Image (cartoon, rainbow, N blue to C red; front, side, top):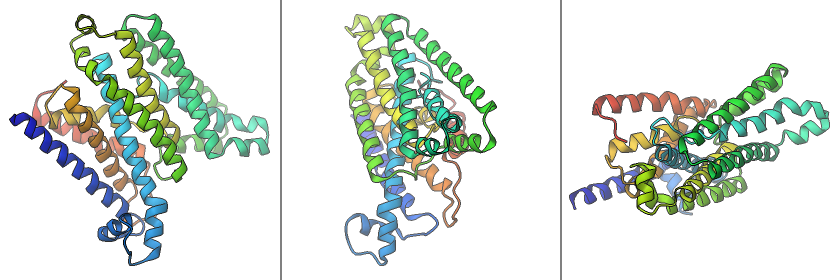
Length: 343
């Protein structure tokens, strides 16, 4: 009873931290807006300056929602992959989805000039990049799904995912070697990741993929606990390993693939957040961990975005770099402080 009370308090505190981090994220930037005015704008009340309302509703709110979707989606994907492969180093991109998306974008950036200047301008539009990234992820996904149907060994699927990642990375390297500096620079900027370039329409589409991924993940929660004890034990409990494995792969693909397509490849969050949450809530029960991981991922991404946009400055740092620069020392400190690795 006491543990349940502690868990409930922890979830409430994490939710309040998401709200607080979201308000700070929206208020800070090149133009600082008081938190009270941010709250008034979100509630539909009068705001001191109309320009503040315009900035909040058209630029900062979509970016904050994107950060929440991105952080929570990658964190859940990391939790699913770490449980499926029973490997604490597994992350949302371990199946090669990010590499497939990167290959699709690399072909657009570094191969568009082959088709001529006018056609290249069409190919380099925002939606073309999203579609190319999605196709790249889907091709890798189909290959991994075929492997998951034919193979009984889950670790073999992990190896196949890593091989696909290496293969696509090699193709990207070849394209980069023969590409001019300007095209290579465009691809590098995309690889930095970005949360602030999405319109409300794009945020809605990303949110739909996030919802579907989370829904499938929730349906798999019951069997995740049994997988921690091994596939043989899970089968003895009546778990359909292949069906459950397929559902986890599809959920991860929907979450990680769509996030990569819209926001670029964002590292570290999916790997680190499940471990961070296990240090805060020492439990292996996924019913307990799941909502905490969602909130934890959202908090980390919002905080990293606040740091990346350099409050009070017109410049912003690459979000992909900030997630590792800020998150890695925190994980190291927690593990050293706890002196115990929970998994």
